[in-house]
Amino acid sequence: MELANKVAIVTGATSGIGAAVARILDQAGMQLVLTGRRYDRLEQLTRELKQAVFLSGDITEPELPQKLLNLSLQTYGRCDVAFNNAGVQAVGTVETIEIEAVCQMVQVNVEAAFRFAYVVLKHFQSINDGHLINTSSVLGTKVRIAAGAHAGTKYAIEAFSEALRMELANTRVRISCIEPGLVKTELHDYWEIHPTESLNVPQPLQPEDIARYVRFILEQPPHIRIPKLMVLPESHIV
Ligand SMILES: NC(=O)c1ccc[n+]([C@@H]2O[C@H](COP(=O)([O-])OP(=O)(O)OC[C@H]3O[C@@H](n4cnc5c(N)ncnc54)[C@H](OP(=O)(O)O)[C@@H]3O)[C@@H](O)[C@H]2O)c1
Image 1 (cartoon, rainbow, N blue to C red):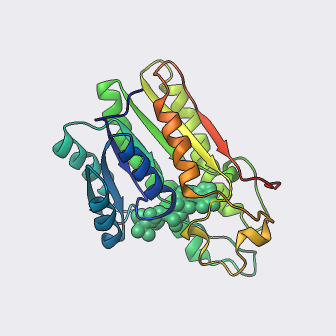
Image 2: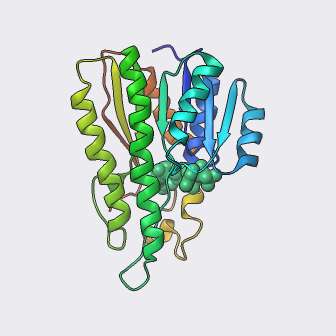
């Protein structure tokens, strides 16, 4: 699919994978609507890109998805792609886990992702076109000790995506999941033992590596569907 002059909404655009996807879609000539909580980051990225607008906010605010879609339609007159990517990670053992952080993670990774997906999909269905890409994880397909709740949020994204794919298979609305392994982003900044040590992956992926595959998924012609794409770094075992 030709991406030039098409429009994408990117959630979690203030850092990591979302920011890299915004940059690569900008290079492909797409027009963008960016979101995240950090206003300064959005302002800076928008200045760097050719055609982008932003709306900062907490993705768990129930009204934000509709406001993002409205901004896309008002600014560009269309919305073709939604990259449903905002996410957080709360991991820990029974002794160390912070229960409130787990519940906050469920709200961001699951509830907000479902809300955003349904809002954009109602629009995509009304125009019988569009592509939703959900950011899952390798942990949407397997579990690790101390990461059960986190994996659970990504299993939820996988189940949701597969059912949507089935529901929309006879339309031109496409659903994909990208399933990254370890990527060097701010997601891991807060943990005492960085996963490069605990997972023994000396060279994690870079956000740009994932962005290339997101672009690849979007560039396929409409008769080709990529429901899932796992991207792992060398030395990934568990
Ligand atoms: N890094 C990895 O190893 C890895 C592996 C597999 C999957 N993933 C997934 O990739 C996605 C992106 O993560 P990343 O690795 O790029 O991490 P990141 O650099 O920490 O980016 C996370 C993004 O989510 C946004 N976000 C978090 N909570 C939010 C909230 N309440 N409201 C609005 N935005 C919020 C952040 O923006 P603000 O803080 O500005 O709000 C930020 O833009 C996540 O879904 C993550 O689960 C990452």
